Amino acid sequence: MDPVIELAGLSVRFGDREILHNLRVALSGRTIGLLGPNGAGKSTLIQTLLGFVPLSAGSATIFGHDIRQQTRELRALVGYMPENDAFIANLTAVSFVRMMGELAGLPPDAALERAHEVLFYVGLGEARYRLLGTYSLGMKQLAKLAQAIVHGPRLLILDEPTNGLDPPARLRMIRLIKEMKQTGSMHLVVCSHLLRDVEETCEEVLILKQGRIVHYSNLEEERRANKRFVELETVGDEKDFAGALTALGCECVGAGLGRIKMVLPADFELREIYRLAADRDLQLRRLNYRRDTLEDIFLKAMEA
Amino acid sequence: MAVYKRTYAAYEGALTPAWSRFLILPRYSFARLWQSKFLVMFFMACFFYPLGCIGYIYLANNLSILSSFGFPVGQFLKVDASLFLYFCWVQAAFTYLLTAFIGPSLVSPDLVNGAMPLYLCRPFSRAEYIAGKMSVLVFLLSLVTWVPGLILFVIQGSLAGWEWTKANLWIAGSLFIGMAVWILVLSLLALALSAWIKWKIAAGGLVLGVFFAGAGFGTALNNVMRTKYGTLLNLTEVMYTVWSKLFRLTPDTGISVEAAWICLGVVCAVCLWLLARRVRAFEVVK
Image (tube, rainbow over the protein chains, first blue to last red):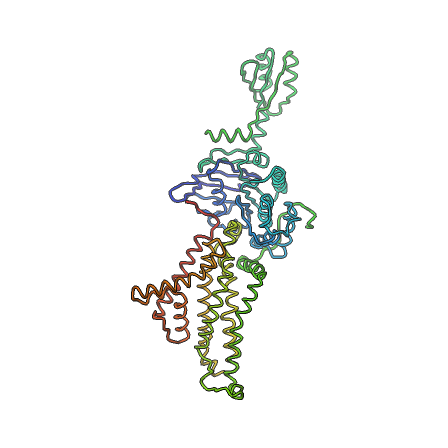
């Protein structure tokens, strides 16, 4: 699969301070999570990809377009929802979204039609004729999302999309992100401090720390791989049991006190474990899949 | 797609040409500006003097009407370069107030509300943004300066005949160039101040203040230093010098026309630099 975003030694410097250092990665997932503590360089990376911040070294491409040489073509393909308040206070939502659509190249009539559509889609249909200055924080977030998708971008960059949202509004935003992902016409980059949001929506995760990539993880593959790691807690002769499992192709390691850690081979049926245990009159007290949560991954990356 | 179908679909229709997109900004700005009754009334007031000039030109070319009322005529009413210079002077005062009213509402709201990333994350450059915002002022100020000025010239030409028109065609050129330079300076100044001062009222006050303070400071400098170059801080005098030269009259401001042109160039360059510093998608916090 062609990469959506490819960073090749990308570095960004503000004065003497290096904000991003030699980033190298190729991201091709439908939804890409961007994680990191405050000051890690997430927003700077987004701004660099949008062409707002000049590169000090390296290069980067989005859908094969060089961010330095083909900025205009690239921006036509991208929708951006900024983290901070960004609106025009004395415009109604429909005028605002329409104007943003027109600036992206839509003809006025099409932009108006799309503005109505996307405002209904994000859930602001009934409030679309209100001035943006009168909107609540949650409504402003939705208006920002509407302006980001009005022109039908191929890549949607969401910077802290659930910032300041109450639980129902957060769930709504997550649902919208999932729905847009499922349309198949759009790739998403979700930059968030909330690991749960990223875990719920993203296939790939890039973790930054002090301007460096400290971890890249394909969550889909990790989820698949996690299902092959099993931990057992038994009462009985676990050595004989482990030998029988090894004979079936499992890699087993005794962890003492009746505990066994094992890696299952492909096409292994879990019922075999129960059958072998029953044959040996062995009690199975616990069977756990090993599951590295995104929080585990993140914390490991931060400790690295 | 009907609005009841609340699903997302990508846009796959035609796009507008990239060069025309800067014109989107003035369209939305005008829609907002004309909601102000004060602006509409003031804008209408800007045409009173050109209407008076039309009457003057008509009478100047129809002296028999005046003499029939017993008014002394002769060299009293004449249409020449000085009339158009005075026209520039009066209309410039109106445009100055118009700019102080409109200018601050163009850029500062976008900066206050953090809208710059939304404009610039699209295929829309900073230059196009400035051109779009500037075109609001250029269009409005043109309507009250060189457009009525050229209409006056055409009226005078039609009344005085082809010989007069041919001999004074340079007045039309001077009028257009003089007013275009004034509009450029005023627009850039208003946008630059609007970009740096986020409070609209303060920005409007500063647009007025730049001229008054410059004039005062320039006069003080002239008196203290016993020079005439302090006048270069007085943009009104600088502009008058340029207009006088364009209308082939002798300026009495004490500064050379070359110095005046350089001064205007420096003002424009500084304004562009100020705009370039502020009109960007992000702020670097030191």
